[in-house]
Length: 189
Image 1 (cartoon, rainbow, N blue to C red):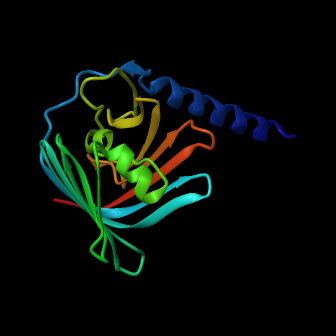
Image 2 (cartoon, one colour):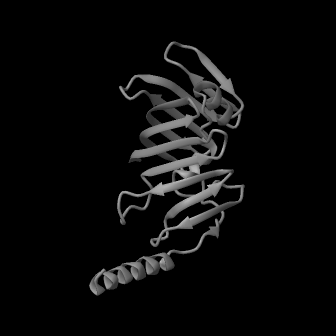
């Protein structure tokens, strides 16, 4: 190899190491921010072994209450789900209903995959859920890059450097087989 190639490789290696050194270290996450209302439209896929669900969603979150409409990739309603501290209810297009004491139990029964809505209400905003310990790694701009809480690992993606809120989340829970949930946010309101 020529001297100029080696010099270029040394320069590239040095710049990679410098970029890594500039990233803030992982830290214990501060207390979560206030539970704020939001509306999000996007797409979700969740898989646990051979069980899975995919489609579009519209989610209205208010402190203490969530309402989520799920549709298949062609826009047909799969389910309407709403929940609060008293429990969670699912309505299917054929009129059948189901209820459970919490989101995890209902999504596991209905779709074969646990979708952690209680945590996701904070995680989708790049914040830890209040009440439980969390570790968070931030990017050079101070935004959440990786969040670990309640056994879940959430990896964030942003549209560009100006984006304040994530537009992609990949959640993984180390079950056997693992639970994988992918969320793409198309619109925040």
